[in-house]
Length: 386
Image 1 (cartoon, one colour):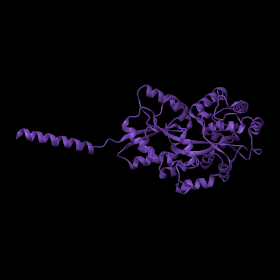
Image 2 (image 1 turned 180 degrees about the horizontal axis):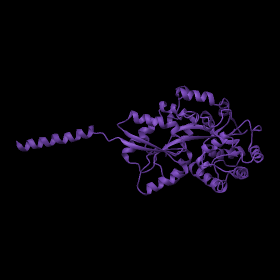
Image 3 (image 1 turned 90 degrees about the vertical axis):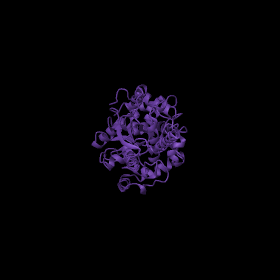
Image 4 (image 1 turned 30 degrees about the vertical axis):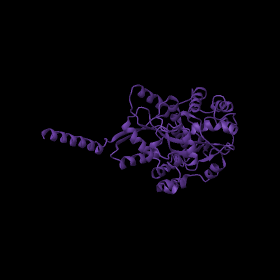
């Protein structure tokens, strides 16, 4: 009897351990998010809403900003050292492309498609094309038709350029009054760079090495009347707003948001080249390789959460990445009241016609974009980047 009692007790103990394991929950994880696109202005409230809704999954979220050109090298060094200090990166096409080229990001699709049911069906048509350029290494979280556009002070610029030749002529006549930022770390800068081959009629707008003869020749000429290239767009808008410069290149969000914030006067205008093609832009969520499994499951859930309509509606923000939402059926009426007021006051009536009338294309693929940045750095901005 004693033997049987011990055996029964052992069986119950075994069942108890099994049931305990079913009931046990993993400890909440701390998540480190690095932003290299200014994207947290659009998404931080959404990330914080996830933490508030799922305290059993997330104990804390740390947010850090960093320059896009420096991030790939930092992540590569961490991965070589076997560290995983960064769990999620929100990035534009710049660091996305560099990371794909260097093999830094986790492959999400189709590898983890079970974690992202129906993911591609939720994107609107324009954003869907922008999602395709990730090659499965990221998930698009915000979208902007972008540009390139010209922004100018109407009190100083009366002969608004309609062609690249007119822009060059204006720049030569008004030296040091036109400025744009280094494309590798500026949405407007890289949109201008990628839009010129379409405007100039280069033989292959998707091949910066062999297909951009007219673009590189034009940029070298333009370089002669540009004082320097700031390392980011914020510095450009500050100088434009202060009156140091009279003209720059821009995109929809960088037109609306600085005027809404009072950095650039509200009365400043935008212009479009006669044969402009929209080069669209987007921000993405990517996961560096090496993030531990217990965090990956939480990150997948977070990435799905950020593409739900309630969080997407927050991305209208103050027009910073206009319009913002990447998924279908998120109208401005869903956005916070403040966002609606900003867009109504600082948006442009002419955008609707420009967006409808002009063709839209995706940016360069990862390898070509990195090549374009490197060539611009080497041949155009090498001595003038600050």
